[in-house]
Image 1: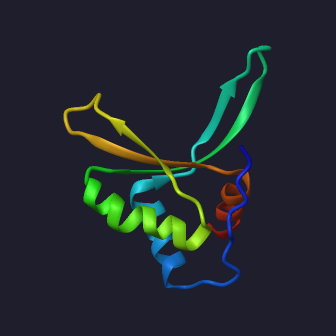
Image 2: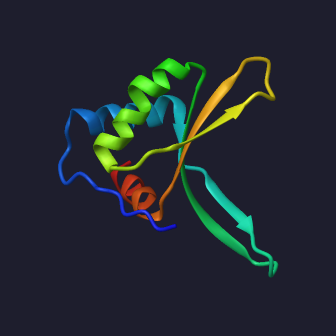
Length: 102
């Protein structure tokens, strides 16, 4: 599925806060996935980790929707001692935009 996010033209308070979240709890991993034919495909993933579902619902998700008109996918990582929530957006357009801003 192709997502076309809104990209802010200018710095604003929400965008500055978003970059603070990337620095604190986020990442732009250099990820690849193997295709059925054996070749590898680049994945453009933006992800955030948090242990508070309330913070995710009240801060992360509304911020993504306001800034980029995208709703992140929520994954629960219960393989650790503490429950961890991971928000994921896979968008090449947004990934490259964020890379330029960093």
